[in-house]
View (cartoon, protein in one colour):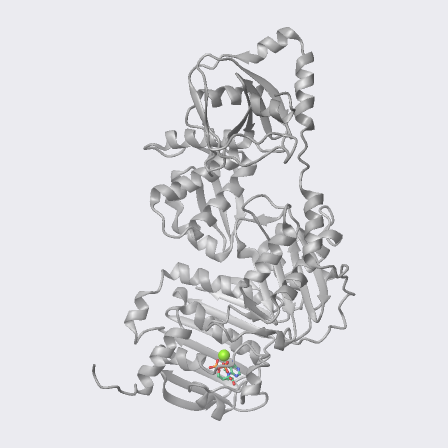
Length: 634
Ligand code: ADP
Ligand code: MG
């Protein structure tokens, strides 16, 4: 082993920089947080080339005196804590005194800063070393320009993504910062284009509107609940307003954006049974709680937090959303949006005092959560009774003989169905379907289409079996097989829109979409960019409806973005599955009997179709003996 050496300051700073400065976005985050800590009411962020060559953050905060400006780039230089006790009552975003040291170690910096009514200072640094320090005239506040990030650490430079993705990352970050501080006017300029501009009037809904547009804003409900010193407020989407991922679930704890599994779980629980499978609610939630109840010093980039009482946080979030959903009075669908209905947030979002402007909070009875959830389950779960079965068999017996015969159709060839479902009709009185068994329908044995139940399952009788077909799963699978065949070597055939669909995307989504135009084209989606936030969808796969197309596109986009490393065929398959799912008839919708019969005919002819492409069974069976046993006939 070589002899141990103490690293010199320069190397030590570069190593430390790796922890704080990963990419341009991490620099912007630190600089904007500093501006917020300096109590700025207006912050402008400008980047060029993904931020790699140029980043500027200008604020109108408290500014720094010359001696502070000269030492703020030193490690552990902070004005925010001075003793250990402070560490447990952190109310500012920064506190480690590490960011500026780390950033300046790996870039070229220009700092212009001035406190109110005082002379300004201009400081130039390269690789953390001060090159010059001069007096200058400057308005109150601070401007930091960071040039040529990682110019002296080429190894880090290599890890940067394309300028587009770095810009997308910064833009997404700026959105989140704007949402967390409606009381600060935030501007974001990317390569000369104005991307974000909020007016700083303190109204969260105004920020949501300016970032995400009118449609989304219309579906937002105001939430505000306080229990045991925990106040949860913000906006939550109506259950019809959903997204394919959690990108639109933002949670700010004491003003700090965090990702908390506890909060996600509470959101899911509050929307349980109200959302389509795989969809996520839109929620912008601010949680204010006494600083002692939360530890933010857990993760270097401070996205994770530890709560001293998880259950309490869970309940507070759960009730806040439930209360908002139950009220649903603020914005009715047809009413024009009144942005001024909303509360002005306190000037300093971090303060934990009760806000005098605040409307009275409503809190449901403080029942134990478990009990409440159980009650809800009983209410919401569809009741599974054996009655519908009886009813159907009775009516069918009375049916006209001729018509009944007409119902019997010969099965053209041998089919086998895998039974994998664990669903039962009723715990005690109805038989469980046979499980994990292969049921063969013998060649040339006729089947009879009985009808449909719960607007979801088609009943078929054949030989001594009763089949239940999930109409959506069956249709989805068939469409998927069709798409796979069609794809073979060619593009999925597309139908152009007469008027292209305009789709609003987050900056990250937009940048991803632009980089994958060709791939989308292959599966029938032709897209082109349109403005700074939108794309135009110009065509869709033929099997989709116009209305379903945008939804399918967004879902595919997000699946691809967050799907991890999978090969091209798998990527395409997930996309085609989404298309098939959106194109298929839906459970809960009414369908024409003819349509359903045709579906059954095709299904029985097709040996491939035993599971939906997502892996759920298409069909389950009950045999006559099991049913007879249940009725105690044998
Ligand atoms: P931290 O924010 O953890 O204290 P930083 O390295 O980010 O550490 O900043 C060091 C110090 O520089 C801060 O504590 C603050 O006093 C000062 N500072 C940084 N940015 C600004 C700004 N925009 N306005 C006023 N003071 C600033
Ligand atoms: Mg800081």
